[in-house]
Image (cartoon, rainbow, N blue to C red; front, side, top):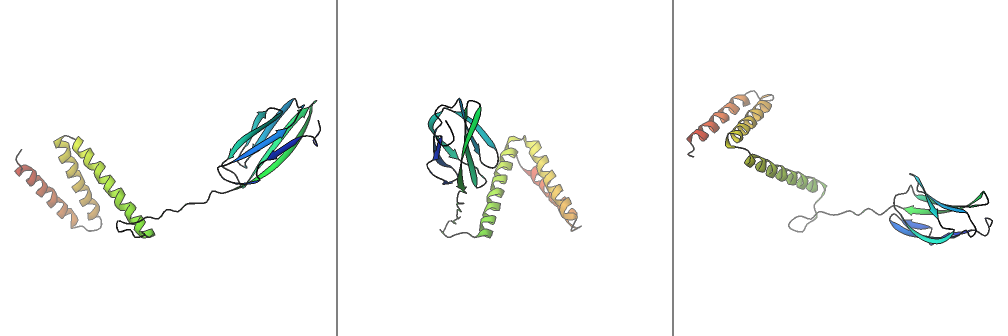
Length: 179
């Protein structure tokens, strides 16, 4: 066998990421046949039968995938190479639509994301609070009021007095509540 009698073919030379390519080869008389698939990121060697057909899905590629078949006959290796152009998968852009059926712009989408995350956080905090004993719930609420008052007082000093007033009002309400 020589390089001229060795056949190697692909059913197509241009594909989109994720498409399947069918390879056929005939290296009759070879002692060892191997396929190398090099997508630009890494090369993979696959042992093959001397004659055959196989399908491969070409996913990730740096634009061109090199398929090389190597057949060894009497210690001498013969190679044939096929280049397949792999185009990027087209990007699908989804549009967000509000409850009235109108498209939402970038700012509207951002705001919608903020509102959704806020509602999720609120729900998680409510569930966490319900799992706590009553005394710990009160301690968490007091810590939250004091923490907010301290942060705001860094910019507005009178906020500390207002925060302490809120803590006092909250404690009076808790004391007045009947159990």
